[in-house]
Image 1 (cartoon, helix red, strand yellow):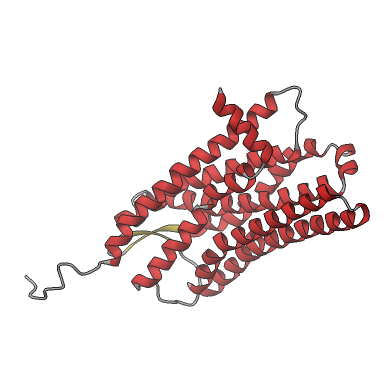
Image 2: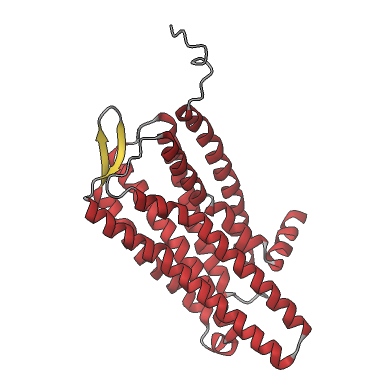
Length: 303
């Protein structure tokens, strides 16, 4: 036995990770499932009301919940692999879960961008939105958004497989150049471009409301402009904070950067937790922050 008196109580980061990850992932899974289920119940109950006209954003919010739910269902597989220290689900599930992780993340992000565009059209061009019956085109838009999302996830299905050394891992076999090209594509189309669309649309809404307020000098419009400004800034900030660490980590892996240190593993797990918590945050940002949604939730609770 060791004679070092500190060895028995020494801090083991790997053991700490295997202990904390199931707890944190479990919290994300439960709260995410509850939040997404509430959103789906409320939105589907709205669609059943004949007196309530269909709203363009409702279909997009349902699509967002579907993508986030699929993302949540991938979480237990990653949790098990981290806790066990190896991938126990075989080569096919390695491909499927890796594909779904990228495709559902991309579909979720694309839907957020589509929501921003829809809100811009509804606020700035309401007459055109009504005449063009935008809500009827949304279903097609939702379906089309999954095409580029699936395209971004397809390389994961193609190159992911299990590798066995001292343990079994779910790994992507790519050269440094191929990994760089794929990482750039993921960053541009899965983060930078949607973020640009979101920022641009909410900036246009802000400018329109500001211009309209200056023309009409309406106090109610001033309050609405302030609300839109704060909400938009919050959406952009949280979107960036949740997704940017994962992309920074992805680029740091290129070129054989060492990932063996416990510090690096801790950062990787924290980045994954931030990205996974999107499924918890989205129902709050795009549901509970809406006064109409909160009224529907209170009606549901009063039944």
